Image (tube, rainbow, N blue to C red; front, side):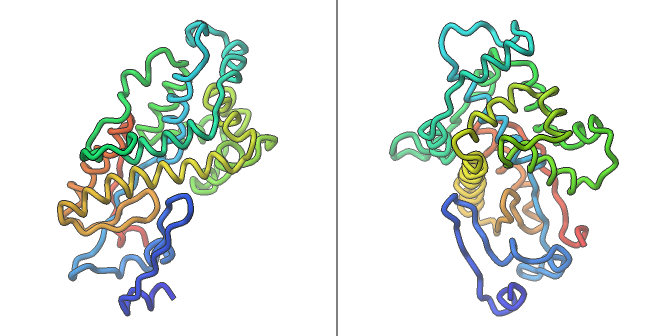
Amino acid sequence: MFCEGVRDGDWQWHVCEFGRVYNNLTGLKRSLRRHLRVNGEPLVSCDVRNSQPLLVGLLCLLACQRRNEGFPSFNSLDRLQLAQTVSKIEIDQHFLDSISLQAAGGRGGGNGDLQYDVVFDKSSLLHDVPDDLRRYVRLCEEGRLYDDLMIGSGEEIDRDAFKKRLFTQVFYGRNFVEGKLTKLFAERFPTVLGIIRAIKRPDYKRLSHHMLRVESAIVIGRAVRRCAEEGIWAATIHDSIVTTPEHAETVVGVMEQAFGSVGVRPTIKVTAFDEEA
């Protein structure tokens, strides 16, 4: 169905209630993408490495800023005190919605070109946060979180299979799910796990839904919009942007600026579709 749609120019286009875009490309098998052309040009994918975990890290940084006044410095706490302190941070839906709005460039309905505004300043985000959260964000920005945890787990497993297990046990599964990866993650990143579980406490799906909103706000609302304004052909496969090789460097810069505007600096990998087969 997707192949026929591409051939006939019948583009599927659906935006879910959380902002993620589904189209012919998202449903097309990887082995078939090598045959795609735009004006005779092959396509490349600009992928944000560790994208979802990185946005979780951003959420954790913002949550730490909302802790109750009177808390001691995070870095003066031992592991038990840290867990108790993090557990007191309230994560309400209004707070999550406000982050989605700011990531999209909205600040209450102003008429300026908010797409290029810096919404969050990284230096202020990193002020007085636990060392484990700093380390987590750095690993995500460098695109090394999965590899670091794989080494720590001591398991010899396919990377994609490892990622799936990590997301099931830590990020998007129910809070009562326990496993070897959950324990490893708790040892290395107690602050991150504490905030993740605080968000999921009323509904374990709440974190994944929020991540989709923020992802779409940054990728679609900022990066793709900028590409359109500059006349660059671009399409999305969730958190990656597809374009032609001649525009790849520009698109990477646009994506770096879009993510940078919310206070994070991701690693972006450019892969030609014919290398994915």
